[in-house]
Length: 467
Picture (cartoon, rainbow, N blue to C red):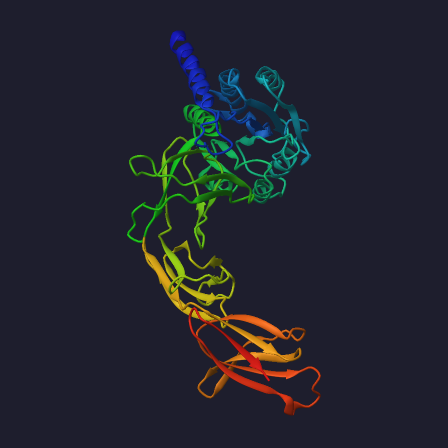
């Protein structure tokens, strides 16, 4: 029997050493395959020593069972690298009654190699008081050092909040601030009606007996130290994971912090690459297509390979002149229908990728060209061709005031103003009929207004003299 216990104990140590030896990369692996330093993990045990822990449970008092299993767990963590532990206890300093809702103390602060100190501290813990869970969670915020690490909190309790606090709200607030990741909660023999009260505090594990308590402890530590694998499928409009070569940003949904950036990759077999990431945060994945594709509230199962599909079908848009042009570079504003916000400013004679759908274009020629509902199709290039411009040079005897208009039937539409300080200007205009209207600055009467109509032909230039 002793041999079996020793084998189980050594197997657990070996399992945790191998598990944590895998390391949890802080950032994505890159093509250079640089060696990434393992992340420091801090685990704080928040231990219930309220009066109810004297209650009988299985082979003895709850407090004794919890201490024994904690000691076994600490033995297995003793040789795990890149880990710091701490112990906070509540309900052990003041008797009940009266109720002291500040009865919470950091018994062993964070340090490496302090498993023995925590075991020694547990020996002297005696259940006495009440259950101030919310207050203890608040105090945990100051227990974690400010330096970067994966901060994990494990709450071990046999009861619920007794001091009127809101453990759910406190836990959520501390997660948003990035104090720690979503806590683990191990409930010892809780009634069914009480179990759901901890779902909002953290990931709840139900220990209805000693065997399940031991299993819960092993699972929690495994999840706290383990990384997991994820495959992101960027789906085209046919549901095939064919899209790739675009950056994906993984945000911690609670804190808004950027956890990873990965440029999506298809391997040699054409399958999406496998990512190794921290399974504990809830992720918001933003795929930096144009416009962005977003997958919110992605929850991973530690130690289990997960696959996430994101709709990200793309096609391309090219805007070009109808023939060669030596004129200045023109750009186009790309918008989504019904939204005046600029999505992209695209150069003429350049190709850009967009999500499949319809887009409105405002091409910054003179006059501007407006094209609505330009369709982008999956894996195809939509080409928009615009006429080559021509050139007109306006010459006046003296500087003055004026504008150029397009002639559209009986209507004049403004195109651009003349520079009132120049007597000679050159304009690059789209083909069509135009009218220039001008009055010299020195002329003080409107009857001296001059008008000239002219035409622009693609690739040609002309001179218009205003006199």
